[in-house]
Length: 134
Figure 1: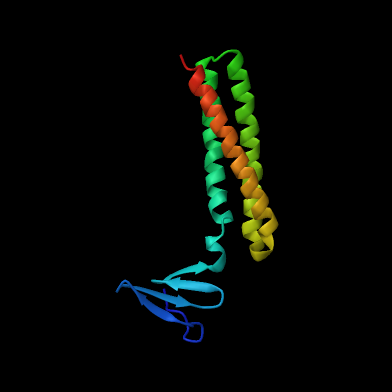
Figure 2 (figure 1 turned 90 degrees about the vertical axis):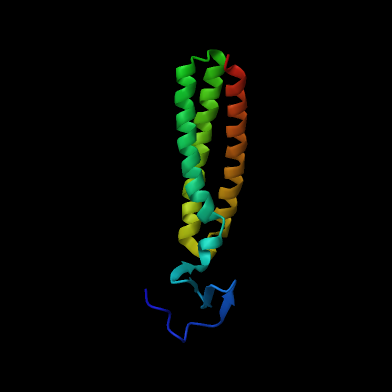
């Protein structure tokens, strides 16, 4: 990868004797890797994590079905299904926030709130599963 043009380089610092940072108004160049200014926003972390948690919910629904947990299993099943829907909504909102850039603060905040609520529901479902295992 070619180094950035000299006109974009604002400040160069030597850190820990080996790393070079080159700052420009919209991009950070770190050892040849270009990161945009939005890479440190919470949406870029919520998106892959909520997609992973969706997979965890689907796996847990399968485990509940295999456990034959009875009446409590039906409630755990429904709780995990609602949790899956919340993680899908969270993924869509965080994707929209990443796409909108600086204008996506409202979607990012909503995605963060839904993500935390969905994590709490997942924790509750896991506690119920643990109590149901004999």
